[in-house]
Image 1: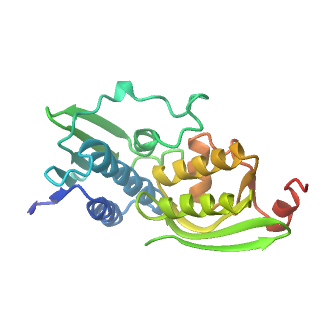
Image 2: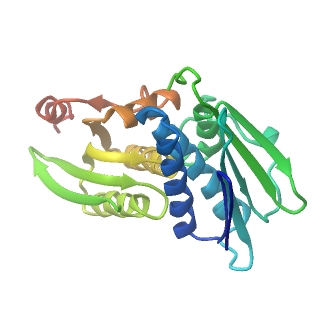
Length: 146
Length: 116
C-alpha cells in the first residue's frame, strides 16, 4: 500500500528481507535526489537499512501478520525517515555498548550504533505495541566523521 | 546483489575472494558456511579478500567477527585483505580495525601466517 503527498512517501510492508531492500533502495534514491554526496548517500541508506532490519527482524520477528511502515520526507531542510514496527518495543537505554571491550567480539548488536553514527538525529518512540524510529539528516550539514 | 565467493590455495593459506554484498540474508550465511566448511576440512589459515566487497551491513560485520572468533577458537588464523574504503571506515568506527589483522598486499599477507 502506498500513499504519496508532496515529497512524502509512505510504504506499508510485510516483514521480509525484500521489504528491507526496498526501504534501503528508496532511501538511496531519496538521498541521491536531494543532492547529498556519495558518502552520505551510503551512510543514509545504510542507516535506513539497519532501522528496517531492526523492525523486521528484532521488532516483528518476521511475523507475517505484522507490518513495517517506512515514510520518507524531504522537508527542504532535512531528510526525515520514519520506520515503525509492531513488535514488543525497543528501549535504546538497554542496548549494550558495542564499543565496550567485553562486547567488541559479539556477532551482533551494532545496528543502532551505526544508525546513530550515520544520522544527525535519531529518535525512538514507543507505540505500544511497536517502536518508531525517526532518522534525520540535515541537508547542507557538514559531513559526519565516519 | 548477492555475494560471490571463490576459493584458492596459496602456500597453505586458503584465500576466499569475496565480492558483492555481505548483508543479512545475502552474504552473511554464505560466508559463515564457507568458513565452517574450510574448518571442517582442517583448513585453518584463512585470508578473506574483501577487495570486491562494495557493501557490508551490521550483520555482515557481525559475521566477520564470528568467523574471526570461530577460526581463532579452533587454533587457526583469519585475516582480512584489501579493504575498500567503506569497509575500512566501518571497521574503524566499530573499533574492529585493531581486532582484525588487516593486510593490503596478498604476498605479505600469505607470508605472515605461521608455518608449522
